[in-house]
Structures are given as C-alpha cells and as structure tokens.
Length: 151
Image (cartoon, rainbow, N blue to C red):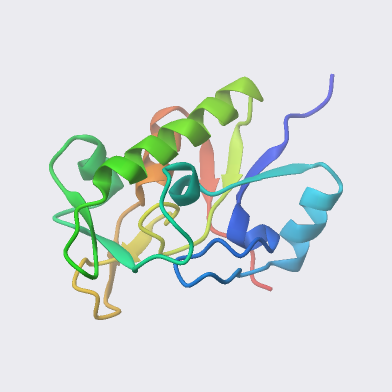
C-alpha cells in the first residue's frame, strides 16, 4: 500500500499565490511535490480570493474562533473575508479526505495556514499564539499540521 501524499501550502511549493503575488519556495517542499510525494493547495485562492490581494489577519481570536463564528478574517481595508477563508479551507479539507492525507506542512503565520503562531489582527506585525483557518480545520479532522522546515 502506498503512503498518502503530504499536503503543503502552494506558496511553499514555489507557486506565486501569496497575498503579494509571490511564492515562498522551500526547496525540500518543491522537490517533494516534483516527486509526487506532496500535493500543493492554496486555501485562499480556492476560496476565490484574487492574487495579489490585500493582506488579511484574524481579528478577535484565531482560526478555531473563525470556524465557530467568534472571530473574523479582516483585510487591511476592513473587509470581512471570513467566508472566503472558510470556503477555501473546506475545499482543501475535501482534497485531504479524498486523498487520505494525514500530514500537512503549512506556511507559518498565515491567517489561513498559520500553525501555532499568527498575526494578532492589528496589521502591525505583532505575533500571537494561534492557528489559521485551514490549520484549525485540518487539526479538527485529525491531520498532523506543522510549519515548514528551515530552508
């Protein structure tokens, strides 16, 4: 029986899908995708957000709170884009379940993919403990989520 692939953030796989239209390629992850050992996905693009897009942060909690309706994902212009973040996370979860993926390496500090640390919602660069929306949803479904290894 073959091992299920690893889920990785698309930006780590070298795909220019970050809010600023750039990638944050991690050579080990790029190679894992090329070998077919990892599947890349961007929850923000799958939630139909454009690239590039205004930066966004979670206000009032973390991704777990967004999923419960207690916090919101707000872009720098003040627009609530929680719905797009949740929809994109659900689309990635569908992929994860279809491919029986049990592990994910997600971009740190992201309001979608952040695992353990995210920005505080003030758009000032301050970090707080918490998970992004996708990381929270995957953890709820038993997926082992971690940040990328150092380049």
